[in-house]
Image (cartoon, rainbow, N blue to C red; front, side):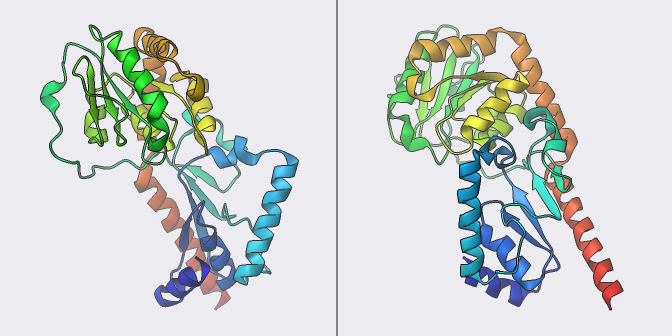
Length: 306
């Protein structure tokens, strides 16, 4: 990525560069060209449990040093995963824990949630307002992992179809839409649907978790990989949901989790507390304000240098 990023920076001549936490070329190129830069971190996991063992940290440091050499940023000592000036993390302390553990340059701004286009044709008429609705999804990255898990979820809901219904996001067709409390679709208008839901069962993807909590919905979380185990632990620690083991999730265990988060009010109360903290944090507008302040500080330093 580095050559393309370098060419774009030289053409656009930005005052500040913003790089996703996993787009390491952004920070490396910014350091090489002497441009202040900020990290946009969609998940807080890398700042907490994913630091790993000393051996893993040493291996990571070795890879980053190799990247510095390959991209021509040999003189840089900063970590391209996190700016030493500003890191925007799209969560809050209510979910991720105390901000003091993250570093003085980290700002927790809450999730960036805004209206977005929704696919048409969703069968809203099939939702029964007399029964709680659960959204079941493995997100856009882990959908291929649902061959066993989603049918188990469907079986759990069918066992409770007199008191519960579920919308299952099933792009691979692992679940038959038999109508007995199950509505299976390859994609759904998630934000609009969450307004009609009572709980969410998911894989622990940060976006899905934050959107559920934004709507005050308790969760049953079955993490698969990546940052998902960390996010699932955050949900459980916040009291906003339960964690189940993905590979050992039977219909009975999934059903018991749903019964608990739907039947015990403390989970919904905790989810609402986290959602309120999200709304108070400011989201995209707060992130933009922090970036403006960074740009302004940069302008002052340049003016003094002149």
